[in-house]
Amino acid sequence: MPNTAMTNLNSTPNPAESPSLPQPDAIAALRAHPRFPEALRMMLHDIVGIYQGNRALNQVLNDRGRVIFGVLALYLHFSRDPRDPASGLTASRMKALCTETGLCSPGRAAAMLLLMRYAGYLAPAQTEGDRRLRLLVPTDRLIASQKERVCCQFRAMALLMPEGALGLANIDNEAFTATMARHFGSGFCAGFRILDSSPALYPLAERNAGMMILFTLLLATGEAGASNLPQPAAVSISALAQRFGVSRPHVLKLLRDAEVMNFVSRGGIDGDRILVLPQLSDALEEFGATLFLFLSQCVRLSLDESKG
Image 1: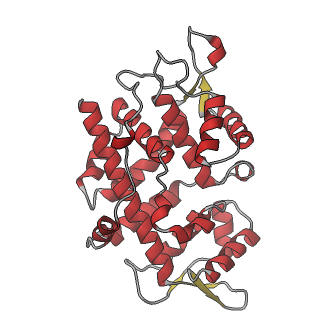
Image 2: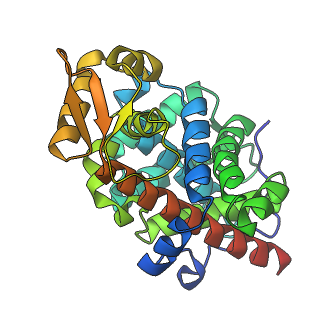
Image 3: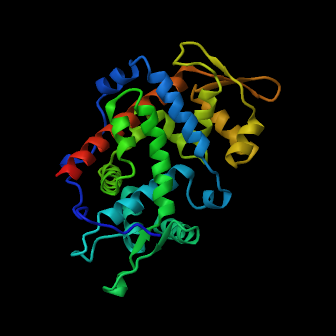
């Protein structure tokens, strides 16, 4: 059943109280935590584990974009003020938000909305008001998928900071979940991007399964922390293609570009002997630390708001 409860959740977060990009000294301090390499690998392993590739959806929006699309859908829904007909999740508002944030074109947003309705992630709202509004609501399936992802992150965070355990303890609290979704979305709308701390990842992150392949390469090194030396990744190109639902040429192109960027080095007859270089380990550590710190802000803001 769709989750439509809006009690005490109708005000959009104040931009001044929204999460912001962590400072470099905070990122460096977290990376220096003795358990950070363990936490990073735990998160990457769990995120890769829940990943489900979809060739049809890939034609509309890459997997990273689809995650953000879901976040923005929840943001619009949980920011709705019943007194304000210009609020809530509708096709027109979603298309406008995707355009404003640069996520995708209005046409791609419309296609994604149709696919999400067909797949049971969104449904028409059961309202008695103005039927011209055509409100949509997230179903339990969409909310559960977002919870699953963030729980992977909270479990890893719990090794490093109290906000991880607090997030896990409150994840089934409807008010907390709603305010978290709103802070996620407000941060993105305000211009926050996790990859801004490691911008070299952007060209590969925009590819289908790009981040998943990079995560898997790091995990396949068997190295429990960043290394100043190249580390062999025990994974095949064919296995990467099969696991993430992309073609072998797609993986090869990504690896060739990663090699140009000094993220990996390849050898062997077919270039199937892959070495992960320190630059990739460093970029993924920056990404992970930034994500953990962003989530910790969201947890604190959400708990403070729910108490108020």
